[in-house]
Every structure is written in structure tokens, then in C-alpha cells.
Image 1 (cartoon, rainbow, N blue to C red):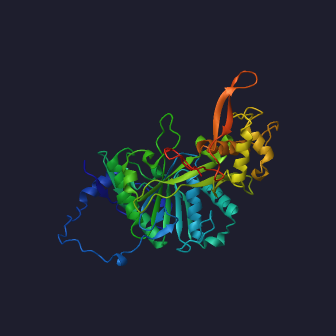
Image 2 (cartoon, rainbow, N blue to C red; image 1 turned 180 degrees about the vertical axis):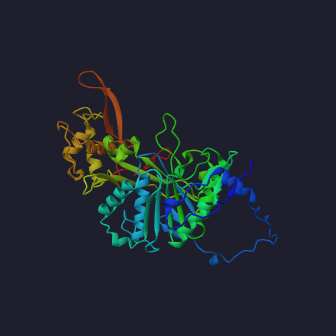
Image 3 (cartoon, helix red, strand yellow; image 1 turned 30 degrees about the vertical axis):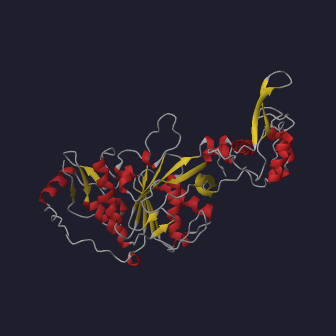
Length: 443
């Protein structure tokens, strides 16, 4: 089934984003019939001319390692995982000229940035911008007239629709008008949130979505600006806790068409345990992970956390803040581990944190460098501190500094007790045996 780029008779005015109305199907069909076909592509049969590598223009990164001038990227995440808040924070930061979360100045200097949202009303976007400015101490003058934030929910922008025969078609007038709007304002980066609100074609059809991403948003990006498409993941299968970029909802053509993609996930239970984060608090932390390595190596995951700003109107609005995972071993020395290994030789310390004889309770009371105030009889206990103690003990077990021995207690009940393992060499690792291929350093 053929797909055509169909153009409306008139281009919407570029000074009004709410004027981007879809072209009626019958009108588009009639106009497409009268539009001359584009000239046939001709091949240049000359052999490849190898340029001097030093003369090839380098990629122009606008913000971090996600926004590249002249490229389309994707931000993927389920609801509630700070993806929209983070993208909007980045857009505001571009206008200011720095990464608001890290405080680092942008190498490119202040940029002209826009954010279009097809789900929220303008009042909600105003709340979010106000919360971001309050959280990071930003004043309107800091943006210097370089920021555009607009809701398109009530007047949708559809860059592609389905024609009368069901085939997808790019709305050329809309794409041209939005591109002209960006060009006139010299927009460097634009966030489109969410992708589903900016087209009306089949989300599960690879041909349709390839057309949307390449012919529509690729044209808007051109060579001068970065376009980020905020997209949802599919519903995960039972047992799956984290989405990957491959879980992007609908056609795989979306992931194939973008230059970069990243995914947002809540901290999972295993990560919370390792990092010493209480189970009740883990969903306040979101991991952002790069998922496509076209421009270079896959970057290391980084984290943001949810913080709430109280606005003057009484609203509470979530903000996205940078977060660095704590090291459970901060303050712990090799002498502390040696002391614990000597202590467990008495055979008196249990491996179960529900027991008053758990080794973690002794560590909380006798290793002041941990700065842990939790005690077995404290009510309520500090769950984060207990999680940190568990994390330390699990890593000592993993690295064979401690081992578990199952035997009967004084009441003839079978219980697990800690015993010493290999001699300590560092606070959190020991030298692995030659045949221990599974030995790893978790921190």
C-alpha cells in the first residue's frame, strides 16, 4: 500500500501553535492527486571519496549524551517514573544554559528550547515549570526569553494521519508550519510529549511509525535542532520489573528510527537491598539508562529521585533531582571487618535479622563509624539503616569474608549462624580463590 506526503492548501500561521489543525481526509486526498510526484532519485556512481577524518564535523551534543543537534531521540518510561518531569527540567536547563541537576554549565551556552505536551492542560505545565524554578532557584530572567512551554491537548498537532484508504500520510502543512515556527525562533531543542498525542496513525505498524519518526520529526529536526520523543513502554509480562528500550510500545520502527534512546525505571527490590534503601522508599528513586549505542558506548546508568515542592498556591508538585547511590561501606575499614570476623568465631550471632542475636544489631551498637542508630528494641526501626546493615552483610557473604553455618541453637532448633570466612584484605572484598570464577566486587 503506497504512502504519500500530502500537503494542505495553506500553511497554518507559524506564530500560533494552536493553529496546527489536521487536514481533512477528503481534502488531502484531492490535493494529493493534483500534487506532482517528486523527481526520481538518481544515483551518483562515483566511488566513495574518503574525507580527511579531521574535516568531518563532530557531533554537536546540546545537553548531556541524549540531545544531538540534527537528531531525533526517544525517552521511554511508564507513568509516574519522572520522564516528563525530567525532560521538562532539561528543557528549562537548556534555556538557562546549565544542567540544573548537576549545576554544570552547558558547553554550548544557553539554548533556545521548546516543550510541547499533548496530555496535560496549560495550568498543569505552568505548575511544573514553577516547581522546577522554585526547586533550582531559577528566575524568569535566567531563561532570557529562550523558553517555550505549551499544551496542545485541546488543539492537537498531528504530524501524520490515516487517509481514506487507511494508509498513513504525513501532514506536510503541519510539519512545514512547525518547522518554520522552530526556524523563526531558532529553536535548538524541542521535547514532544508523548509521541502518541502527535500522530493519528497505527502505533503498531512499522511503516506508519517509520514515516512519523523519519519523514515528520526527522524533517523538523533537520540539521539544526534536537527532537526528543517521549514514549510509553508496552505492558510488561508477569515477573518483569524493568522495561528496556526494546519494550517501547508499538512498532519497533520507533526505536530503529531514533539516534538515541533511554529508559526510566523505578529502583527494583534487589537494587534497594544492595544500596541500603528501604523498600518503602525505593519507588522514590528512578534509574535512567541509555539503550542505544549508535553514537558511542552505552553510558552508565544514572539516577534521579522524586522531591516535592510546595507552591505558593498550595499545590504540591513533584520535581526531578539528581541522586547518587550511597555506598553502604562509607566509613567501614578493613579493621572493622577483621573485628566482625573475630567476633563471629564465638558462634553466637545469627544470620536472621528478626532475631535479637542478629549480627547486624551488634554492628549497629559497636561500630560507631557506621553512624547507625537503629537497635533491635527500637520502635519504629529505621528501615533504611536496617537495609544498609543487610547490604553490608550480603556483600561480605558474597565475597566470602563471612560464611553461614547451619546448626542447632541451645533449644535444639536448627538456625543459621555467621562464621568467619577468608582473611580480610579490604573492607568489602577478599582475594578470590583461583578456581572461584564467580567472585565479584559488588561495589
